[in-house]
Length: 319
Image (cartoon, rainbow, N blue to C red; front, side, top):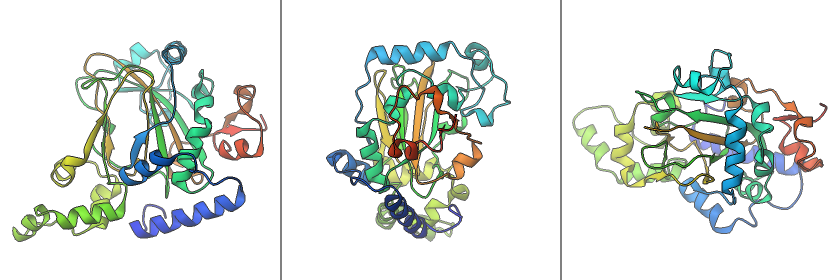
């Protein structure tokens, strides 16, 4: 249902689910400590992550993943299911990804995913204690052509969700940077932009089909948004932001807003996403996610009611 109802209904359902979650897991109101970052995330759809990730932490993570075979797709569920060395996968795919249990066991990963500053920010955005429903670590390899996610698109994981991206390698322009179109996560911002633009009027006067409002805009390519970069640049060209930085750079973003990666030209990029939402959502089902044994990380994280709730979709606390 979440991808068939209109944008206003989607927001209403998200609010209802957040209220229900807040009643189920009472506690301090998330977002109270996030201040300007939360305002920026709400207004723009993206902000910096409140994490301090050191060069030594990045080296720990890179060393760990270099020693593990990966799968030839941006998520293992989209691969052929055969784990291979990264060098071999680089000859087959733009991406090499790892299973959930492998990411969970990585140095520093769960500590970052459950960092109180991150939980406060993403919980403030969601309106409740967040549910950690996806952890995915992947290489992006230099290749002759672009991969699927290198075209502007929107994710439709949940009624409301937020993603933390962490780069474990240095990223410069042309080496796997990330692009986001600010405001495209928000129905009212999109409606205002379409209303102010003369470009839609020009197309209507020429008798060509056009976008009449935010709902039409959201439904491009059945909702995924792929294949319409020209439209996005015409309407939102001044709002396209590029993100890159040294290893350890992290951002928080609502990827229901339009975004894309970029293929690296000369060196591999290693990145992890941490996804927080409201329930066991559409992406959770499509990626065939199964909680991993909590024993993998039990000695590294708190074992209390709040932690068990936050991680219930990614950790099986009975194992």
